[in-house]
Length: 300
Length: 299
Image (cartoon, rainbow over the protein chains, first blue to last red):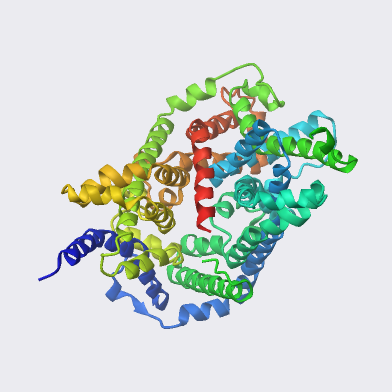
């Protein structure tokens, strides 16, 4: 017979089972869909009727390498821009920390995190209201009789990457700033006291206490950003995509959607998604390994 | 003491710069929301000439029109329903599984925990996800909005960490009184986890409110459209309109008196789709910060 302790344990196990089945059904079963990369998927046919094509769909990646190269260029350009701006929330948090009026501080915190709560569709709606060729920005310039050529930012090919990076910063900076504020709150206040007694001024405290104190947090966020090199996200590029900026916003996530939906090449889109996922996991683990090696801490 | 710490000229200059800069930063973050709002309640023709700080001649016809459209109030309701239902299920079941993971007697506990956590890193991609959801019969079904994502690895980590630091004596005494698993969970663990449950509820509800890709790809039924997708539809329409300048010119040339500008309609739908977030915002923000702090403590 089972002991009482074991009986309770197995009872918990039974309660946990439906949850595990759920997790497998919604997170692991979709992974079996990767098998379609070896078939010629057709939604109208059942699995047994599908034609096995081996590595044909993978070969296609090689055959369409100029397309892949173009998409990869956009993907990496966006990722590097986003890596480049990772210090911004850190700087904002340090500046924020210097504000002593609690009410003003709370006001800034509340207001700057607002963009974080809205969907990319709403970001698009706001950007459209402000930057389209008859939006706020150009109306204002016109009313001030400043004769600038109207190049609606939403359709400006040359500025597309920077515009998207700017929107991303606008949406996320307040939120990331709070993470740094939490880290600042965690810095031992005795360090500040000691430095102040040693005669450190405001800038001295920032340079010798706050910035070193935030370094680990910055490092973790930077590594996470690097491990997301191939993930620009889908929503942002989907909503801002239009014919004028098409060749700049074709990032991997959007391109996979396009191959799957516009061209209905399900199998090829599956191959691309699978390769992207596997490279992403490999990248995450190598970054984590490097972090463990160099800093002795794991980011996972 | 305070008088002595006035600081150098450089420091005072920095302070002034800092206060001004932060005010500007806040302005940039919040003004687009305000602009869309005042535009939406302005007289359309005056608004086109520019509104900046005050609405130009109050006019709420756009809202009357939007609410008489029927699709929009309905989509709004669908969004509210799916968000409420999803949040309740997600919070309750994620908490229950987290609680089970704190039970050391449970066989295969570590293995099961690892399986759940690895779901965070595994991403099947758009097409396999789409095919799976279709296979499950979730296409054109309200359940598509609610079922996926109920168990979320990140929430599990947060709640489990929280439950682990609750005093175990309460639970033990209840068990001695003969309370079963469900009673202990519902009467003791769940209520005691209120801070973290509130945080997760905020994450879950904001996420659910903002999600639209499921609707966009898998739901065509008119009575299941969510407000985000409706908004996107209107925006897209307007975008192709503005892009097609020739068509616009022809439109204006016809000299037809437009009762409602598409701009104003768009702006009012934007306001409606952000409204629930703005309304619960103070609560959201407080809990988000709490959530980050809890995460920060975890490391």
